[in-house]
Length: 236
Ligand code: TYD
Image 1 (spheres, rainbow, N blue to C red):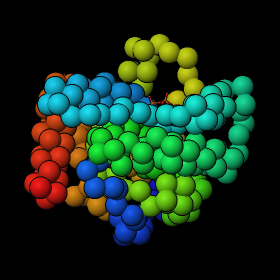
Image 2 (tube, protein in one colour; image 1 turned 135 degrees about the horizontal axis):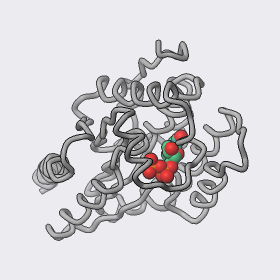
Image 3 (tube, rainbow, N blue to C red; image 1 turned 90 degrees about the vertical axis):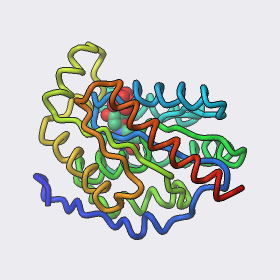
Image 4 (cartoon, protein in one colour; image 1 turned 45 degrees about the vertical axis):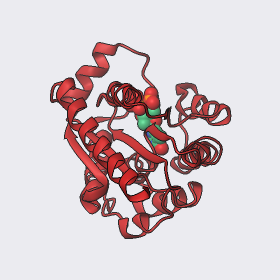
C-alpha cells in the first residue's frame, strides 16, 4: 500500500500478456516523474538512432495526433481544476487510443522505431496510484485503449523529489495541473513507476535520473541498440 492506501502491486502478467508490436518496428517508451529529464534523453536517443540510419518517430503523451493534442490542452489546463480522477483517467486513455491507432501502430507497421515520451505507465502511476483510482483498474482501461500494445522497452528515469523540484524551478515554466500536486502525490507516482519496473525487469531499464546526462544517454543507447540488433538477427 502507498501513502494513499492504494495497492501499487500491478498485475503485470496480464500487461505483458498483451499483443506484441508488429514485426520490424519497436516501441521504446520513456517514463518518470515530472522533471526527470525524459525529453532530453528521448531526443538524444533519436539522434543516435538516426545517425545509425534508422527511421525514427519521436512522439509524446498526452498528444501525438491532432485529436490527442487537443485533449492534452484540455486535461492539463489549470483553469479546468478541479477535474475528477475518473474524468482525468478517461481523457488520458482517449488521447492514447487515438495516438496508438493513428500514429504509433502505423509507424510500427512501417518498421520504424517509435520513441514515446510517456505511455500507459504514466496513467497507472498518476491516475492509478497518485489519484488513488487503483493501478489494476487503470491498467485494464489502458490495455483496452491501446488494444494490448506493449512497449519493447521502457526507460524509467527514476527521480527523487528534491532533484525534480529543483529542475522544475530552473525551467521556471508555467506549472500544469499535475506539477502543482503535493509531494505525497509525486512520491506515490514514483513508487508506482518503480513497482511496475520491478514486476517486469526484462522490459525496463531503470536509471537514476540524477546521474550526468551523457552517462544516461550512453546507457540508454547501448540497451536500445542491443535490442534492435537482436530483433534484426531474429527476423533475418
Ligand atoms: P508534460 O508537460 O508532458 O510533462 P513531462 O514533461 O513531465 O512529461 O505533462 C504531462 C503531465 O501529464 C505530467 O505531469 C504527467 C501527466 N500524465 C498523467 O497524469 N497521465 C498520463 O497518462 C500521462 C501521459 C501524463
